[in-house]
Amino acid sequence: MTDRGHFNTRLGIILATAGSAVGLGNIWRFPFMTGQNGGAAFILIYLGCVFLLGIPGMVAEFIIGRQSGTNAARAYHSLAGRTPWAVTGFLGVVTSMIILGFYAVVAGWCIQYLMVSLGGQLQGDAGAVADYFTSFSSNPWKPALWAVGFIVITHFVVVKGVRHGIERASKLMMPVLLVLLLVIVAASCMLPGAGAGIEFLLKPDFSKLSGSVFLEALGQAFFSLSLGTACLCTYASYFNKKTRLARSATQIALLDSFIAILAGLMIFPAAFSVGVNPDSGPSLIFITLPNVFQQAFAAVPVLGYVISVLFYALLALAALTSTISMHEIGTAFFHEELHISRRAGAWIVTVLCSVIGGLCSLSMGAVDGLTIAGQTLLDFCDGLTAQILLPLGSLLTCLFVGWFLPRHIVSDQLTNWGENGKGYYHIFLFLVRCVCPLCILAVFLHQLGVI
Image (cartoon, rainbow, N blue to C red; front, side, top):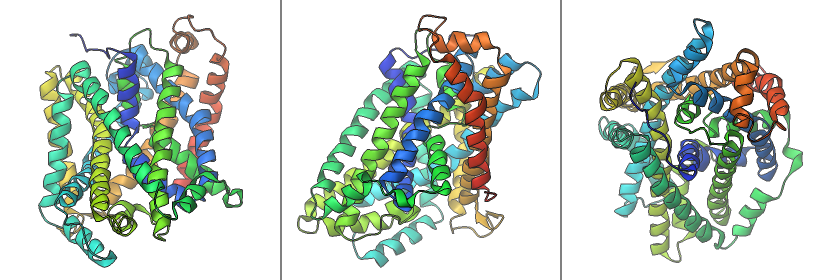
């Protein structure tokens, strides 16, 4: 096999892998889940889940990826041989392509809102903004076109390879994303009445805590860190032998959590400033926030215009950092398993995911009958991946590393062949063998409504 390429720098590893985790889940899903579950108390539980369970889950995928040095499907097969475990990697490839398909639809909405924000067209009262979203999302061609266009943009990054495509793009996009986020946070926190939003986010209200909140926080931690998609496994196959897996996972988790909290500081102060309920749900970014920006910056309309444009640019950029990683999983799979060029493998992913994205977009109202189990195709794909495929992939990965993979492989990968000491090896093994699987199983059952 020809050289697969590797990340060139440790910074490239951190930014690219963090970019896969930093997406709409941080900037949209995390804030509204925080709002629904009591603010800072939820954040504390979330951070505990990230560091106690999320990081071991990340390291488990890193171990599989670097040890095998190949795509996710072949990784498990090369380590497990002709056993049922080999299906786990293929499941991750399928999951990532489904996610890329429907995720591109929402990313396309961000592009549309960026365009209309630039044109100053996203104006009017709450009813007008809601009507605009309904009209646009049910349009027979425009949202589908944006979704396909977003996948094609992703394609042209991935096709350039790991070092010249993914790593180079990540080094550019992640700093820009962080700067955009900080600018909007600063503007939001200076609004009149913003202090109530900051207090809501940073002052814990432990009366809100419950078993359900813990499970929601745990589920968000796994969702936010891209566990179960085979993304981390694929990226780790491009790590060099000097990469310290546990330290890299910790740095990625810190950056991911920092951006999620910044997203809360961007949204809650502005929302409280104009008296908007902070648990407005998934409609927050396309219906609620346009009105928030208008009202909050009514005294200086040009500032409201600038913040709106920057916000949707931020969303589009965050979406792109995630879709790149989703695309790479399938590209590596087809490139290596079909023994074709990387470019041809990337085009297979682009075409397949464009079909999924187009159908998901049309199911939002343009075409009747594109439903499964009473849900639009987009909602069904979202639920299938978030509630079943992601937890299942994470569970199988932890069981595989904890119980099946030879101990010397786990030890060698975790400690860089003894260079970093074995002080945390047994702690990691206990977490990945016992604690992580039980917690993931609890999240899985909770999402299915069993507990």
